[in-house]
Length: 153
Image (cartoon, rainbow, N blue to C red; front, side, top):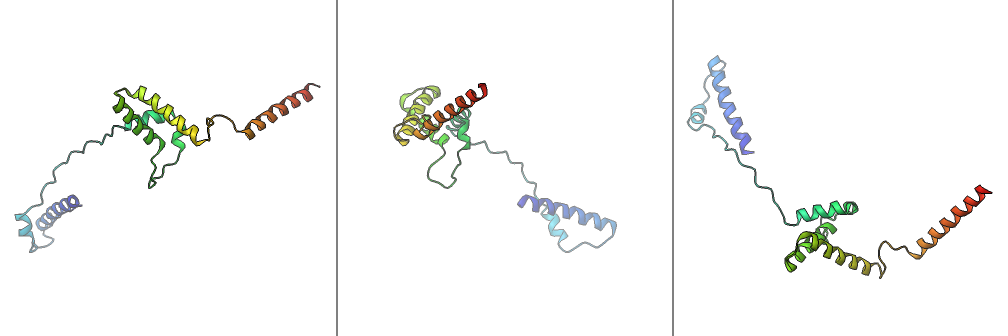
C-alpha cells in the first residue's frame, strides 16, 4: 500500500507543476514542502526463495504412483494429515533410520501401510471380495451363462 501512495504523491507533484505552468491555478501552500521532501523511490525487492520441504518430492512421487489418492478429501483443519503426507513422513523416517534411498524406503513403508490397512479391514486384504460380493459375482456368472444357453437354443 505504501508503494501506491508514494507513486501517487509523485504523480500529484508532477501534475500540479504542469497545471501551474499552464496557468490554471497558482502554487498551493503545500507545494514548497512537497518539493523539499520529494517522494522516495521504492526499491525493487527480490522474490523470496521458494520453500522446499524434504517431503514434497516424496509426496509427488506417491501421488504419481497412486493416482486414486488424489480423490481422497483433505481435511484442512483436521488432526490427521492426507495419506500422501503421512506416507512421505514415514518414508523420511525410514530413510533416516536405516540410511537407505527413497525407493527402498518406499517399498518398506508401502508394506507397513498395507499391513495397517489389512488390520483395519479385519484381517482380509482390501482387494479381497466380501462374502456378499463373491455371491453376487457368482450369480452374475450364472446369469450370463444361462443367457448364453438361451441364445444358442
